[in-house]
Length: 265
Ligand SMILES: NC(=O)c1ccc[n+]([C@@H]2O[C@H](COP(=O)([O-])OP(=O)(O)OC[C@H]3O[C@@H](n4cnc5c(N)ncnc54)[C@H](OP(=O)(O)O)[C@@H]3O)[C@@H](O)[C@H]2O)c1
Image (tube, rainbow, N blue to C red; front, side, top):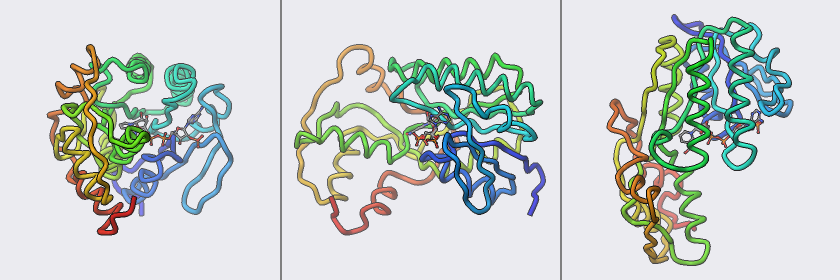
């Protein structure tokens, strides 16, 4: 059913971790969704279009006839400047030509403080959005618990869990981020950057302890202090926010859902 303030929205990054939970959430809120992937796809309830931010191919057709764009696509590991920064510019230009009324960009808490290459690109992409002709809003979210788990898995490849125990994190459930994004689409452009984090700030060693307990693992934590400004920012809470409201689902909730009482590794 069409709700008040519902919009026709194009979602980039629709196949990603956030995109997959955002699509049903947007539909539940009454929005009409068109979804982008680089590959042709078909699923009931969503109109899929093929487009590539790296080349601009398909973007004009993708934005044609929508009122809003929710821009989630990103490429942290390869061609990040080409896809995140220049690709965002291509998208903003195409959306401007098509008369799109609102572009919502998803960024990360700390992109303006924490000296990581990926974050520099995300900050540059925020600036592209803010300088473009399409009215905009930005939501900076903290880390998804699945991302924190990937990090912990790779930190324990050699046996013990390596890491700086005083680094602070604030995992947030991607479903709750999607809910916030659906509300932002309904509210219209603000020209502002909002932040959204999880319900609790955890030290790395606390997060590791809970993760090990959930998986029935006895791997020890081997402290490795992250040097320089990066370490200082991470320990000072560069990845966390005091913004309210926050999500409600905790790291413990995520671990209980993922591992239950199985102790599965
Ligand atoms: N992960 C976190 O903890 C976290 C936290 C806060 C904010 N964020 C932000 O949230 C957003 C979504 O993150 P995620 O973890 O859901 O991402 P993800 O799972 O890595 O998915 C990336 C998406 O980007 C799309 N993509 C990549 N290259 C593309 C290209 N050249 N053209 C068009 N689409 C392209 C992919 O689509 P196809 O492969 O289908 O083409 C895919 O849907 C990102 O902007 C990220 O910075 C993430």
